[in-house]
Image 1 (cartoon, rainbow over the protein chains, first blue to last red):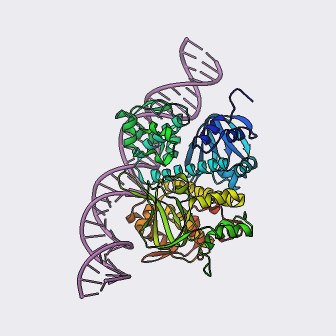
Image 2 (tube, rainbow over the protein chains, first blue to last red):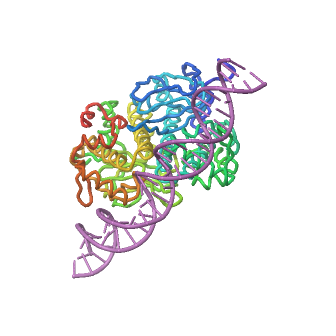
Image 3 (cartoon, rainbow over the protein chains, first blue to last red):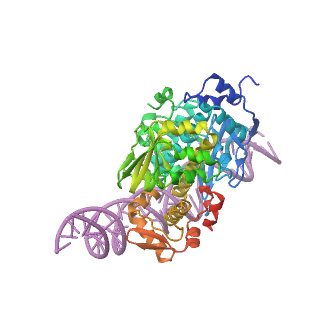
Length: 248
Length: 248
DNA sequence: CGCCCATTTGACAGCTTTCAAATCGCGTGG
DNA sequence: CCACGCGATTTGAAAGCTGTCAAATGGGCG
């Protein structure tokens, strides 16, 4: 096993809800997996596939999306180190959405059966996995509200806040200082806007000093003001208590 | 036990994915519960609550929703006989959204521990419950895409198609002939539109013969055309095979 | 019969999209 | 080292879908 176990970030996240003991952490780390390095833009899963493996993000970023009949794309979620994407698709049988790599990533593929067996062999692990899918669902619900009922500026700010906080909760940086390696077109696909309008809203947020921008990334400048402008309340992320302070 | 067990619709749904044997069905039916009749508009759960029970819909309709800072409401899902709402809230600890009754309903409240224990005692039940939360998540994803990337007319048509198919899958009617007891304001809150615009779009769908309307409800007139106008593909509902034919 | 709430309708405003063109960065090749 | 090319970002102007506001209509119920 390498100096740092590839699955460690994931186990850390599963462990953050305090269901697991040491033995169970070891059991998760001992799951069989195949490690792959995947370049940006590549697909991990396509709608209609019947995946038999689940993917754990080791490093890098990925996202899930759907495409409507008129060709518009809607991004459904963003995933980072420690996230298990596609537990959904693999358990449900047929993938109902696509999973694509955002920035070059290391991904661990774990056979579905191995995970499911472990989940029911050790209830604590089962609870942690279940909990994880429930948090996933909670984030989806917030996105429905975000896209459905917030104006463009608020919507975009909300996306930034969520990303910042999740990044920090995953131990990947500070919510006050980080980079978002997404194009404005991708931000548009997250928020149900057009790239042009995303550009204008970013400009507006920057003009008021809430964020700072370089060409290809965004940094939060004034967390409190941004969170206020975003109508952002972190409770839907169901972060463990010790990480709640971040949101202040 | 009454002639028809109250939990029967739920057990039927849990069973539809073919994980359960007879013993397990019985175990579900034997779960402890409290039955309540609740009038329209009443809340079952409020955001911030710490529910310790999960609610199974026996009859009637309910919906989940969030309210944004500016007071706009976004409905997140609609629930009918056989649905378990709020497994999410009760497992996650703190409710991140509201659950409200749409039409007078009978609801069975089951203690969370009883469900969780059973889920891990009998893996098949655990799988069925997990599967159910995953389907829930799949529907949320479709709603994100619906609200984010479809125009008003398509969006509304999509909502109608989903409702029709779920109603039929739950054994509550035919997808070609049913009523939707929602106000136009509620339809608006489902789709991220205004009531006025919902009115216009319903009129447009009716003018083209896709639906028929009475004052307080909608009926599908021409399923195929409506599904086409709605960009509707039922696969995200993950209906069991024997019910797939419905969607044709 | 009268009240109240939901539905309709019309006119107008406005947020967001659309369409196009210009600018900018950055990697590549000469 | 510098020009070139291409994708991403910016910007402006105009169109359009959806929202807003207000008033009228309609139905159900006490």
